[in-house]
Image (tube, rainbow, N blue to C red; front, side, top):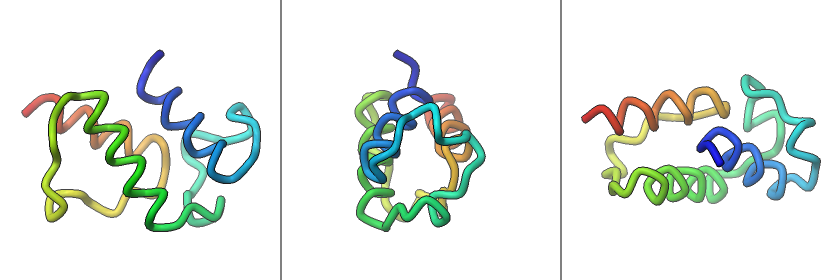
Length: 77
């Protein structure tokens, strides 16, 4: 399963909707995702990549596409 799909499933579970009902550019804020859930998403990225990301290097991520692009940038390092 691709990271994008895992993130979508995690977000969907957090807000109790079906994964296919969440758009890749839909704002986490608009969905009601809190800061703790965002931390869980970063942990998911770290687990997927096998890398730890220092907290001070984590930008404000507000969509699945932003998280996915962040993961791609971290993977390239």
